[in-house]
Amino acid sequence: MAKKGKKEAESYGKDSFDPLLIESKNAATVVLMLQSPELDVILKACEAIYRYAEKGDENKAILAELGALEPISRLIKHEDKPVRRSAVMVLGVISAQNDVKKYLKKMNVIPSVIELLEPEEDVVIHEFASLCLSFLSSEPSVKVQIINEDGLEPLIGLLSSADPDVKKNSLETIYNLVQVDAETRMALRELEGLDYLIEMLGANHLIVGLDVITSCMPSGVIGDLSDLHVDALLVISNCLEDEDTMQLIQQTGALDKLMQFARTATLVDVQRKAVNAILRAAQNSKNKKILHDHGVEKILVGLLGPDNADIRETACLAITVMCENESSKVSFGKWGKPLVQLLQNDYGEVKEAAALALSSLTTANMNNSIAVYKARGIEPLVQLLANEREGVVAHVAAVLTNMSSQNILRSNIQAKGVMTALVGPLQSASSLVQSKAALAVSAFACDSEAREEFRIAGGLVALVWLLNSNINEVRRNACWAVFVCASDEPTCLEMFRLGALEILQEINLSTCRKNNFSEAALQKLFEGNLSIKYSLYGGLSSSDIIVDGFYDPGRVMTW
Image 1 (tube, rainbow, N blue to C red):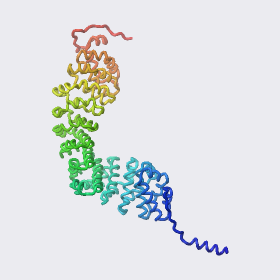
Image 2 (image 1 turned 60 degrees about the vertical axis):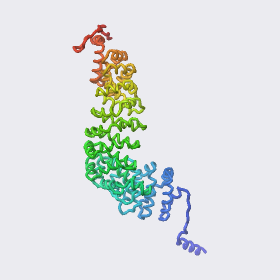
Image 3 (image 1 turned 120 degrees about the horizontal axis):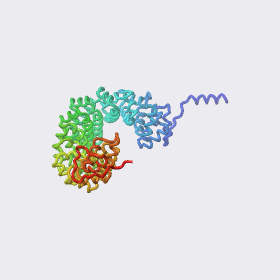
Image 4 (image 1 turned 135 degrees about the vertical axis):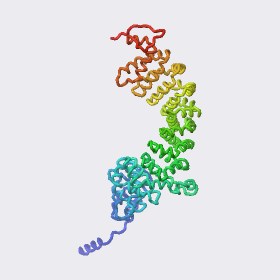
């Protein structure tokens, strides 16, 4: 009997294990199935985990806590292609979650993912491997690792893929990488990555027929195409500060296409990115000339009209930068009215950007200042000195200061109550606003009526207080404003009463706080009351002119 039992046991051991059907609703159980040596089991586990991870970030975090990342990162290197495909699908989806990104970064999964970008892999593997990199490359250290692991070249290769998702994911990753340094942007050009991007911008079905596409194609396809536009523009905009890249884009005709996008694109996101690309390009002085030669001014002014706050704001910022080119500044002066109209826009960001553009437009340019006046810009500018946005107030004060160099404009601005309106900005918590407001006071307090209005409005209190500022520019501009305000006796005496003399004396005793303006302001105060100067110093200088009312009060006692 014993022998027979042994024989039966041996026979049973040689037979295959009976099939076992498992139905599990527990994520931990399915994660364990990833360790199976059976391919079918692994595939089913990956499919289940993929569906589970797609449901939300919470599920992704749970999978990471259950230890799914280690077997998944191993399975993306599996010799069986279906297993690799299923595993990288999971990895691509799950890597969107922030905690998962940290885990994957520690596991050094980047080299394995880059290997999946090779041409012999199928399109699904390319899609999810590039998706994974697009998520992970948002981390600075991962960007550097991808570049060091030679990941840029295969990503550029995927730009020629027929699959829009592969293109989109690759573009997003490249966009993150080119922000690292100029060397990476140069590598993009050397690897002919810009050629692919330019080709995308120039594709007939994209450049010519956006309106046709919008009306004729399914919405999902439209989304894919517009996304590619946006991503291509994002990468290009990051490279446009480079002169060589700009010249290449100009030579290939892509710059004209970029201008066309900015001018006529019906998809707002495409138009916004095109304008942003122009803004980035304009940061370089040589690029400004190229853009001017392509008539960028008219395009940017035209973009102030569409009812989209982002586009208007970006266009205003681009105008600001382009005004550094004198030829562009002259061109913009012909179309100042749209900028003035934006000062009354409902969006604070747009108001601020418009005020900044006007500040650049009117700097050292009489004709542009007159153009703002003719566009009825004075009243809204003065009113905006009471705006709640500090940037708006600072830029508006700068515009008014620029315009004050013309007598007729200064008189018109004073008539709108600018001296009273400047009192509030002088008391701002922002040093930029304080500085610009003090400079504006010095520009408009050049006649007795303006100084009287300022004194009655309580402006001298705020101005004298700014003399105590630890910010050099604020203190310097306040000193200059005091110098101008001390031109008549009533104002001068009021500043004496407020302690301006003592503060200026203290400033001028400090080697690090005094400046030419503080010395000039002190001298101007003394000119308004030579008796005090004589009392303090025991004498007058040859430039001091004694008038009626001078007396010798005696020397000030020092202990």
